[in-house]
Image (cartoon, rainbow, N blue to C red; front, side, top):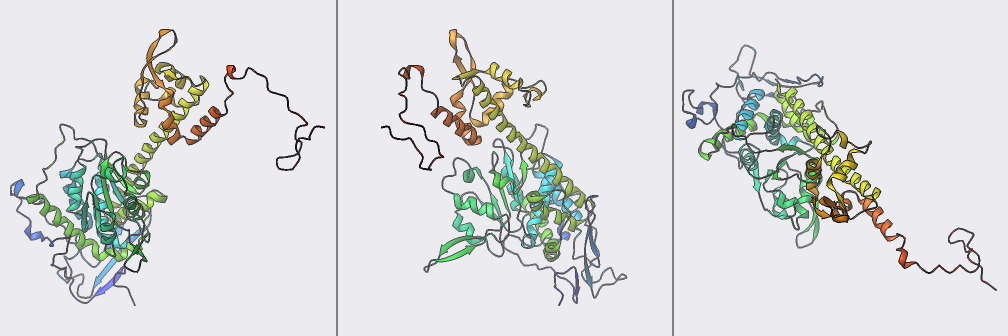
Length: 493
């Protein structure tokens, strides 16, 4: 028996979309509700660029436009009552043009927020659309919305997502018990603001919520809890798409599973449309309802699609739902999605390299201190000169003219290390780095160096004044066999 969601399905009656409101999804919006083209901008709820081009339901073909994606994913829906000569047959206007619909969603998001790149805008658009096929996905990608300071537009991104994703659940300080019970067979899309209160120094005891967000990236990773009066072990589903906004990077376990948006403050010339509930919410809700009408019937085919990915491993798991949506839409979206995937994953890889560069700096500074017999402090200029002279290090080519005092302070700032005035021998005073300020950073980021330093200090030769008396010579003979062999010193007669 053929699955009703298989690529080829025969309908005997005209497809009719439900008009009843669904919690979290709203009431379907009709194109005839669109205002006239000459309406004032503030009276318009969306771009009046004309109706979408009708798409015949007899054949929906979604071919990847990327040169790397040689495979084509085809979905064919045949209607018994429609024919080539009957454009007004059953379902003639039931399926919207996916590519044009994504274009409209992308333009709407771009009006309300300023993102770092065109690729980032493409990624957000596809992430929103992917939430509407969440039941068909094997992985639920996170959307990490991070910024260096407040006022960069993170909350506005969540506002737009709340009106466009499938069944949104906005939370700031919700308990894990609530989320465990909300996520079920039909999970919501979690929107978590102020994520630094979960992962940052203010987090406190929120290990359950951290574990839920980590495990929920992949299907069939339940959280087991003791529940009910009989204290029975009960599995709670964790699989759900989630967007997390916060200041500073989230933990690596989240960033590795996320499409990362790095927000910045808007420049003076960058303008956005004010987000007003009276006008903005109906527009975005209309797009959400059209996304649901287009993608909900395609969940079955989407679950069987294996798109060609330009990345591998966990990055491929995270981006695959977005590429699936792009392949379903067709047109320029398959190539555009893969280009965004490559650009954004490479950018995050460069961010990881920057983090690795800082770890390299800590190790090289440790080596400089060791070479100078671990003094109490090293002058900034001396430390910079020693790093530049290291032929194997990257510091001579760092920046445009090599590492300088400003670069050094900037790289060490995240570790809480900064230079200070220090008085050296012979009354010399200069900016310097104190060795004890590095001990915590070495212990956290280079534990092998910290252990070696501790061992060497514990086993150091006592000071000269503490060993004035010679050691007494040993009596008897020294052991010959290996330790534990029973061979030891012979007693004297």
